[in-house]
Image 1 (cartoon, rainbow, N blue to C red):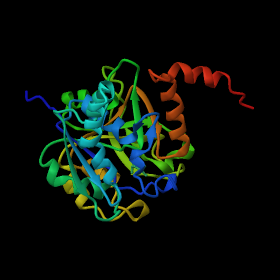
Image 2: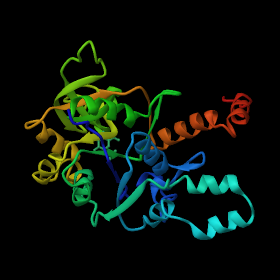
Image 3: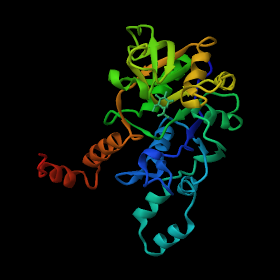
Length: 298
Ligand code: G1P
């Protein structure tokens, strides 16, 4: 049987980031750092860890910093080299490993996540691909595979589209795509066939409390299903609606990953990520834990 490998990842990064104004007035929200790395770099490293080497960014105006971040910085590198700061030089170069390539395509208008994915169609072509929303910072279990690597391993078995999900509180169904699923098999309890998917339903009508997190592996058939969609929730062309239509043609699976999701599209999630990742950070973790212990919290 042909091995099902993923070669390409799409990063929709054209959003305005209004929830983080004024920080995002002139800089992309995906460049906000959690400790010392921008959100987009966490997502790219996750895709790389899943074996993906072609990164496709769907950008918009005022997103230049993302392109620069994944490009060579000659001035910086030559200054670091001259100053013999080799550890920093290695760190800077590690952002774009030699075997990784990046392509950038513009989403000319904010027409939604589904539309952003369609903008990458000509670069993806007729092959399966991953979609990573950098707002969702996903951390696998300590020492274990990343969330996308876990999904890629599932994809190798099924060859069908897979979406990462997690339980969300009832009052939060309006923030996420929500799925209804068949029972999982005993041999693979994390993987469930999706019966239904709805974008941001009210709790009263939500088919479950299983919310979509920002990691998808999709077959290329998704493109024709997105193209058929009229605008949905928020007047936007929704990826969720495209997936709902794909369900009529192909099986799509929900996957309960091992690890943790930080919703860095919200200030609360961003702060949680910052505190927890700082506590684990090899350089500042020990200091930061003892600092936190000394805080008076009431
Ligand atoms: C998007 C998707 C939604 C998904 C969410 C995950 O929403 O439309 O289905 O649950 O990402 O973060 P957004 O956060 O862009 O509003």
